[in-house]
Length: 141
Image 1 (cartoon, rainbow, N blue to C red):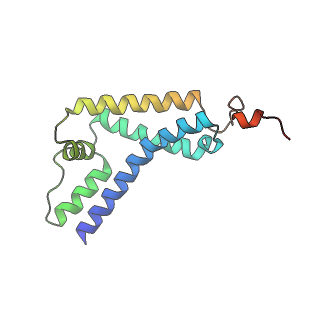
Image 2: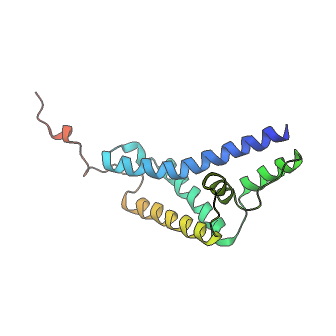
Image 3: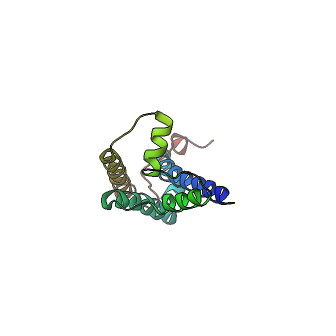
């Protein structure tokens, strides 16, 4: 049961990472293609908060609560936990090399800055009337 709980937390953690990265990709796509749903205030504030928490954790050296919880369940199941952060662990596991922690702090910070700049340049809640699709300008027949 502990292993199942740990794996569930792992899936939640992966979903969190996908939300942060994929959310930004979708926001850019929405900006480019005029998708008004990418201006949804709840979505945008949740997205900004999600990367803000990651950057705050990196700068303060705080452990991610999801990593702590997953490690707790893994230890309870008699398994080993992550010796470092969730992202560092899986980056090493997939790419087979180690990256210094300062690289993650820089990457998280730059990504958070990108999200903030996008939040300001393409703010939530106000549909952007300056972006029109070519079909919008085609004469109606």
